Length: 230
Image (cartoon, rainbow, N blue to C red; front, top):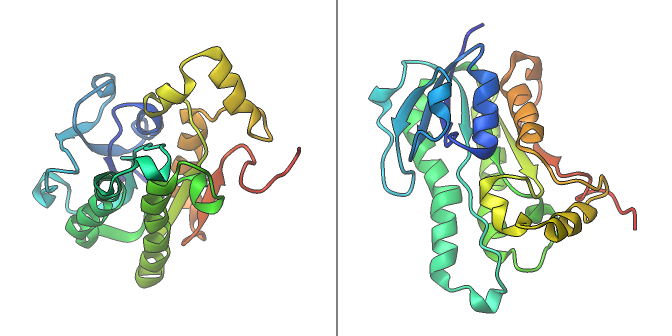
């Protein structure tokens, strides 16, 4: 079945990897600040800044079968160096932006539709310097479970919780070979996640093959959240 799928973000990184897979079989509506590399794909691009704009439902088809929310931030600093504005900004981008978009599209979600959000491994395991990002991503996980319960069985809602992934957002943390080696060795599988690793699970969650999974937080994190191999 050819589906209408809305992605918030998708011009680079994980979103672009998802778009490359989905655009082969489905109709994609991608709302992002810039076109990025999407001009190479057959998608409907909607200029959109989730922190400033409201997404007009009239720009979308009458029925949506899938939804992916990708915007995120990495504000890694000691708590004493984070001002409250950073917490507000992270919540606005990661959580309140998600809520505002869903408010505008929930009536368009078809029977059997699937929603996919992104959290972080830092919600499950405490990490220093992650207070702001973990707080906002933790809000996503709680929201997703409640939303999944409220809209079952019509809509499935699941969350992907990655560890560090090799995307433009993480470039500062992976800026040289030494940093890449250190980050890889933190994970039991001794590697850094790729956008394709995340895209593969997102595409599965959106597919009809995932007809019996909802309200789940799925760790795609090289074993970091569950394995101790030291």
